[in-house]
Amino acid sequence: MRASKSIWQMVLMTCFIVGCSKPQVTEVAGHYVAKRPFGSELLTLHPDGSYAQVYSNSSGLQTNLGKWKYDPADPGLALQHAWMFDYHGYLVRTTAWYLDVRRSFSGVKLCCPDNDDPFYRQRTP
Image 1 (cartoon, rainbow, N blue to C red):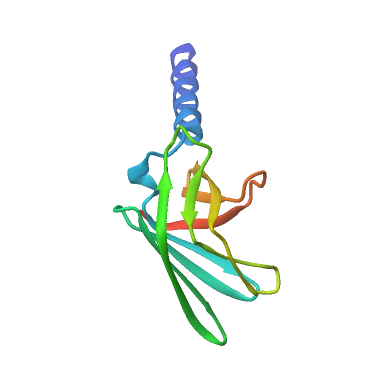
Image 2 (image 1 turned 90 degrees about the horizontal axis):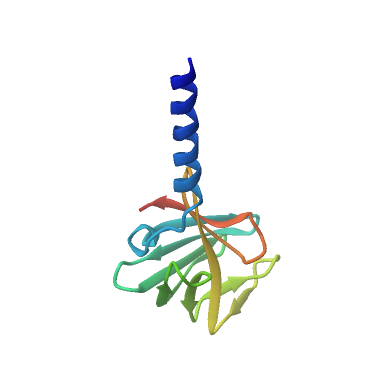
């Protein structure tokens, strides 16, 4: 009985450590989806440091290309010349957009700083 309790404690501690650790660069590259009331976005982070951002709504598709950089020691992911959309779906261009990179049991998620709600959820690594 005592041994099984220790094993469960070790399993839970391992899951906690793995779940809370920062993802590595190779885990961050992939496809991310963001659903919004006014449309949806697909963000593809390529392993070579480039990205494609595709926004779609009832009016059609728009595509933006740029570069991304991530270092697990830094606060987050930097997207150069990314698009952001306000709460009404209007396009706002940026020179640099920073997102927190977090690991969850369902995969990697990209969040706005100071907000735990995922902005993008990883669809595939």
